[in-house]
Length: 249
Image (cartoon, rainbow, N blue to C red; front, side, top):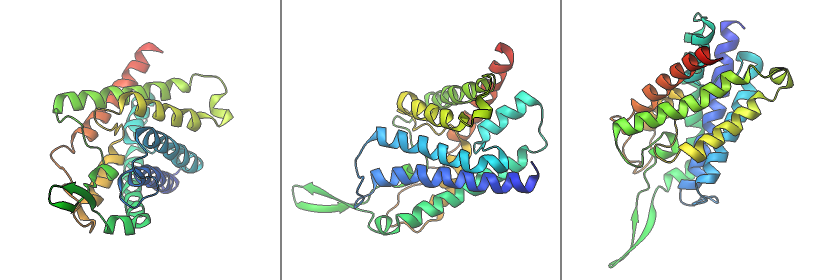
C-alpha cells in the first residue's frame, strides 16, 4: 500500500466511522430527532455498525485501521513504523470530516438546540449539551478511574484484533471487520458506561476540535481539561495490548 492510498483510505474510513457514530449519538440526544431517547443499546450498535462501514470501506486502500490505537499496536507487533504517520494523519483528518458531516446532517436539530423543561413558573427552554454527540464525556469525573477504563477497554479491543490474525482463513474470508464491529458493540455494552468508551484517540480528539469551532447555539463546553484521557488512555491500552499479544502468543 502506498502512502497516498493509505491516506485517502483512512480519511474515508474514519470519516464514515465518525459520521455514523456521532450520527447515532445525535439521533438519540437531539430534540426533534425521530430516534430521541432511544437509549444506550442503540448507541452501542450504532457505533458497531459505524466501525463495520468504515473498516470495510477503507480496507481495499489502507487495510481499514481507522484507529490510532490499532495502528500503534500493529506497529509494535510488526516493528514496521514507516507508515504510522500517514495512518495517523489520515485518521485525524477523517475524524474531523466525519464530525462536520454529522453536523450538516443534523443541521436543523442543532439549530434548535434546546429542550422544554417544566418548572413551577411554567415551561422554559434549556440548551442540550452537545459535546457528548461528538466526543466522550465521563459519567463520574475521576481522572485515574477514567484513564484506567479507557486503557482496559482498549486492551479489550486491540488484543482480540491481533489474535484474530491467528485464526486460519479468517482474513481471507472477509469477516474480520464484521467480527471487530461486534467486538466494539460488546465493549460498548460492557465497558462503555463509565466514560463512553472512546478506545480511539482520533474518534475523540478530531470531533472535539470540530465541536470547539462549530456554530451550534448553546452548545456547552468542549471540555479540553478532560480531552487528554481519551487520547492517552487508548494509546496506552493499544501498546499494552500489543505487548501482551507478543508475550502470550
